[in-house]
Image (cartoon, rainbow, N blue to C red):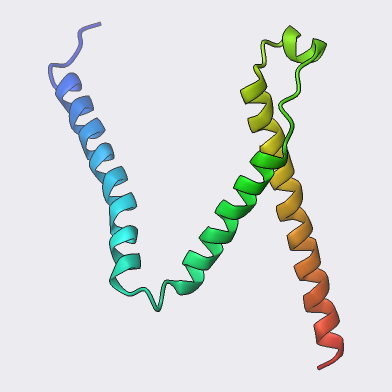
Length: 110
C-alpha cells in the first residue's frame, strides 16, 4: 500500500490547529475574566473555594506507606496525592448533599 504525500503535512497541520485551539480556549476565558471582574466575581469565588478545598484535603491527607504501597510502588508523595484527591471528593460530595438538603428545607419555609 502506498502512502499519500499529503498525509504527513496534513497531520502536522491538524496538530498545529489543535494546539492553537487549545491555547485560545485557555487564553480567551482568562482575558474575559480579567476584562470585567464584577461579572466574573461568582466564578472566581467558586474557583477559590475549589482551590481551598483541594489544598485543605492535600494537607490533611497522610503520607502513608505499608505493604500495599510497597507492592504497587507507591511513594509517600503519591500516597498523599491519592489521599488528598479522595478527601477532596468526600468534602465536595458532602457539600453537595448539604446544599441539596438546604434547598429542600428552604422550600418548606417559603
